[in-house]
Length: 141
Image (cartoon, rainbow, N blue to C red):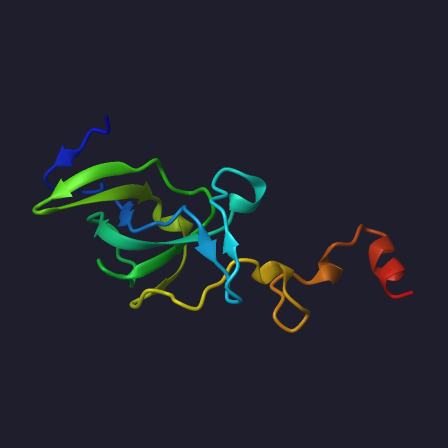
């Protein structure tokens, strides 16, 4: 049985509470369904969350209701919270873990971009070289 906290939670200092983080199956742009991979190597990537509350010293530009992109693994386990007539799962993150924010829910963010073609790749293959440049030399042959 999962316990539920009733009432309001308020973060301290500059901490942030987020909700609506998704860890289940996901769908790629091409329509492939990727199974829940939370906790596996492929499950380690930044995730979006909706700001539920900000601590009193958090003066960042994002607001309650905005969406923040959180560094991978930089969130706590979820706490079930009954706030009025709805129940949601919230997680605490540190302000320093926020990579970006948006006032709208991101809808065109896809899994697997780091494996995409050269035009859309988020990882530059030339960055994987040793100090002598051996990999870069091998790749140019």
